[in-house]
Length: 416
Image (tube, rainbow, N blue to C red; front, side, top):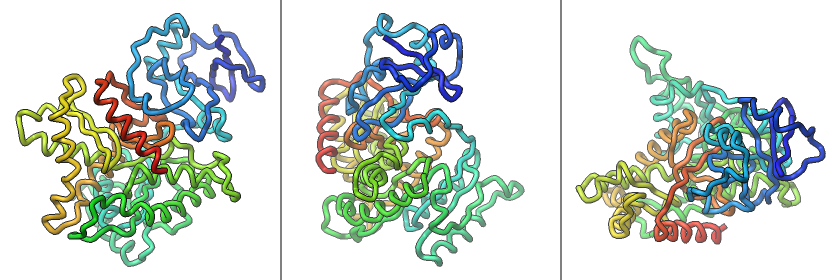
């Protein structure tokens, strides 16, 4: 049975009865063209607060996990009214988990055309990312706020970035303004670029990203708690390594009360996005272009998983080839070491491909590669933020490819 409700001027429906909401008849809803909200009550520790329903199967999920990436071809016409199926096809259905204490905030969302973005830490990655946002974000970013604990570094980039101008079109780029720490979460998106303990060039450390986990976890925990205290409602964007694991730290730490109990009053899991997979796609493209045998990756390929160990490059979804995919995966994973062998830290491509370009795509509601919550881990895939709600690309994945993706997912779950 389906129950229909009217609440805060919005239309809602559910397979379970909510006695505290005003019931209405189906006929009062189906001719309305507004967004439709589906209410569920899943465990908030392993499910998102809200997301865009791009497939009817998502209405029947009893739990979330890596299966969110799989396309479902089942016929739901005998389970769901035709007009709800039409709304799903039109991108007008949003699922809300009422187990989150702040679930009603989803109903109040209003999308802003131009975002205010605040960026923390102006090291190699942060400063390069800020350059990209300044040069490329004029049509979707209204203001860029910068903060760094080193005041001289902060002032340097305020001066440098604001002096980048197009002659005779001097207002084309978003203004860049300094922040103090108390202003960091006065924005639509907070970008975390702080990092500590990066192994120097020439270091024997095999997994550079994981080497930073402990120290970066301590830093990001501080800002996750601050975001909670500020009742931050924007997107918490994680750029520092290891991206996927740090996203999980933000979710867990921001949703604890002072007694360390999970109360889910902090940042919802779906408002935390990791930005590390974009450059892995860029590196896969770089190597794919070197041979006619792999050139098709640019049109047919995908990347999945973390920014580092466990990454999966698929040469093609429709014509998946294990050997070619493994070749591209190995090349992509070692690409950063190649740059290090030249005597340089490999931060430019990540800052722009994973950072600036992917963040701009997020704001503009375009598809990008990002790490989002899939039940118990943040996992990288193609996604977009449409009307403020995350949408994951769903595919008919070959069984052997999905098996590798699932193995990576399960590895991430075990780490944290």
